[in-house]
Amino acid sequence: MTVDRFGNVQLAITAADAAQIGVKPGGSLRVQYANLRLAVPYRDMFGAVEPGELVAFLDSAGLVSLAVNGGNAAQRLGLAPGARVLITAVR
Image (cartoon, rainbow, N blue to C red):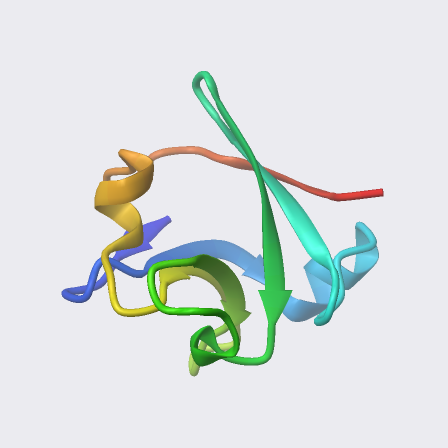
């Protein structure tokens, strides 16, 4: 996982990887890290959610990323580069 200068969190999972575990755009994914466990909408772009809301989307590198529309996902989630998170489908 990496963090860009905007605070977006790029995960080491492609759209194909996400689809294999049942995560598809328009649905949601569960993010688990330490004691954090959140359901996050998976959308086509971060602007698809209201300002201030957390979203997962496919970034320009073809990887699933976490962002806050107009904010910093890394700070909000307490994630640093190299942290390990578990992604699962919300059923």
